[in-house]
Length: 315
Image (cartoon, rainbow, N blue to C red):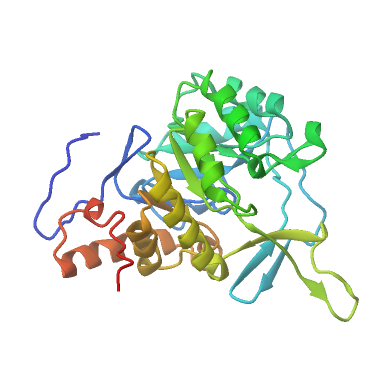
């Protein structure tokens, strides 16, 4: 891919650089909402995406949490799938070959219950053809630390990122949980440990109750809140983090339209990930890409990069 940026009349430049990778546009899929990519191939042209982030991969196959796993809530979705996946060996053997057929960066989301779990996945992925970057799911509970989620402790984040950076041959993105008091401190810890980028936010922890049975609506009791309901929180956190770090920021949370994506970019995001919208509008990613082009043309911008971090808070 040509890394030089250029502009053609009526064809604004959507390319962005992210952790050493050039994306044809800033629109990516969010882990856990796009399967392994193959599931959406009959519905959209995968080559038109900026990047595909596959669902979380663990060292061993996981059956996931007991049902019900998903429940619709006001302006969003509450889910608790429990990182169901085929495991790293089967992913490499059966899922990745299909993705190699496409001209789009593939980012593998990595999850685990200990640093050793994460490392087991990362080590098996080293040198495997077709992987452009890793995204670390630090919202996982650390079983060796009493179940504390990795991503709520700056020291834990620093440790896991630094360990993985010591062996990874591809860029490492740290995906941040919003369930913290100070997300900037977590982002800075990831940067200090060598992360090539941060993505945020992961789901907000939530609970839905059936008032007739007086029981949780999810089989796992609590779950992750995603969708339009979380967008204002996500934009605020992206804005805060983008001002504090020097590495690229990927915005996630309730992005359904091009306008939503533009808010994140103006707040300081280099790129965005589309998640829950994939479920109810499978072509949302491509519609957002076209919407970005339309906005740039109508507002006289030559490239999407001109918009990054242009938020003015002065009244």
